[in-house]
Length: 362
Image 1: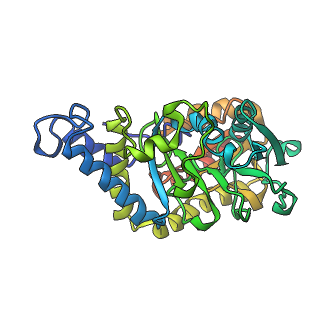
Image 2 (image 1 turned 120 degrees about the vertical axis):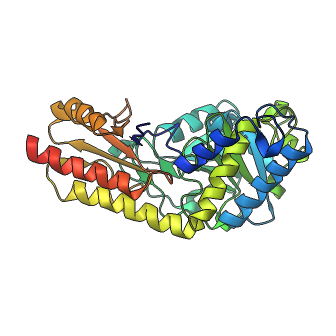
Image 3 (image 1 turned 135 degrees about the vertical axis):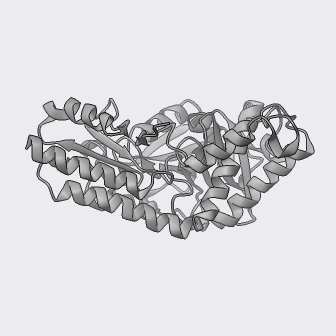
């Protein structure tokens, strides 16, 4: 079997040892003689798996007890609807502020606009989202129900290095592309959500971390399976949960704990990103996409000085086992997504190829 280094933005690379374990256990979960995707989500075995996943999340992330952990259908984009449904009624004005830093932040804002009075409190659209915009929380109307941001922007390669202090107004963060990649101060947040398909498991499900005090405020017309309280009251199982996604997430979290948890992973991720950014900055053949002060450590986006060489770069990289480096269709160029599962060896292989390609084509 010939495994590539998968730089795809998502569904993304998962730890090889996790997939090998899933392969070994697929037909016989926990000695039951049945697969985890065959057993009842109401069984004591699955309930134990779900509870263990809760425990791993709290242990690894340091999530406080006043947060509820929810496993919800539909991955991250469905939360673009769920968040306003659950939080707009925190204030009678039904007002929310969105910080636009890229495509998914814009999509979230547009979806929320269907349900309430939504404003753009800050945006970096004028610079093609190459940086995080300046934002002063003091400019917020006091009747704002929540503030929404996208913590890491996969298309443009930027991230919030420092999160704003919104005081009593809940801060909502879409952390799909970086949850469990760095340590967080949960005191700053009211709600965090993330699709699993970057750092946590397969696509199709999302994890929602919400302060318990924010539950029970859904708009009257909120569909039952968009209401976070419905999940909280039923240990995320008001209906059949995505059992395989929970199982894979559990294995990924076990792997993350074995690697040394978030302190070790945060350090490694910074080293991986620096290796590639140094290769970009030290060679005029390449141009970094994001402002240096706002660069993502999950998605390294760059361009070739001569864009006509893009296809050749991608084709030759593919031959070298460097997979899915094509930039998003909105921006083009090159994108190396280096989530938790990407080893340092993969980043080094990319840097070696970049240097050779520049020498041969510069």
